[in-house]
Image 1 (tube, rainbow, N blue to C red):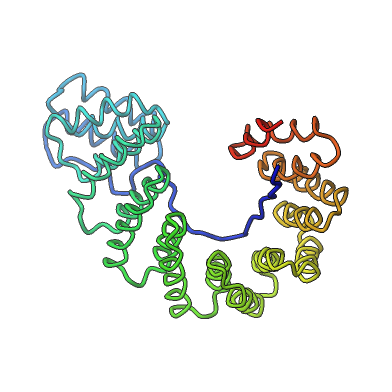
Image 2: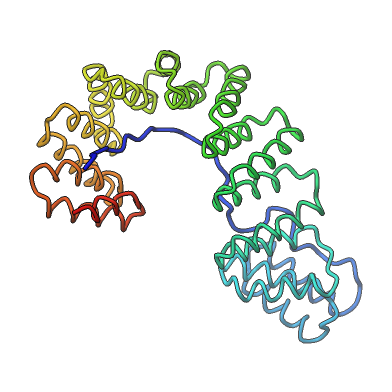
Length: 348
């Protein structure tokens, strides 16, 4: 069986989580003067003071008295969303929308509720409605892009992030996000171009050089990758990801001494760096130091007990001496999402 251990790089990709809670103002005071509106406004003031439970009681009182007054439906839906009661939240939010509520925040709230329920497609559709209502909102474009990435729709994420950049070309975080989407989409040249743009904008940020170096490594531009890692380290000698990433390239080049020096340096400075131990384990495996490699994976797992790739790689090393022990590690790796370990299990 072809034994291929998994080298991992250390990158600082900036991505929005498709996280909960719309940031657009949701619960606002009503300009109506009727009795029910006054009760609603009391609830808004309680919410603004952080007393959500009391606010909820006021919104419930409004709904029971006048169901045609829509603001309390949105407000209650939002509070339920914050409480992670996604199905209930969706009921009130969709009622608000279906009855003609026109808050620019409602579609984003619906999207967040759908994400909470695990309905990726419905969430993306709702975010599309939010963007249609707020076409110039850079934040919404970035948020939908994060949803596209979670769904594996990297090209669509790229398009949203390109639009976000057109709205605000000085926001460096969006270039980082687009570079991440492009890298996932195997558009390495596009990712390289984004990191190069970031370096033009801020030539003193080691993250940008290290990230571009990772892409160069994947493009088989080893010398250029090493130069970027060297520059990152020159800018910040304590930026450990650059050492780890330089070691990855040197392992691929079979420059094992240089790689070992970098990984041991990181471990000397950051003794619980699981990634450095994982990659050092691979280096020892490649140089036929099986016991040393297993020891490194043991360390990586001791500091990160759900480290699927460390189990996967340890299984590869153990397969040289104890097939049953290797199987245990591969099964553990699969349980932590390393699906490729299943192939090793089934070739027994």
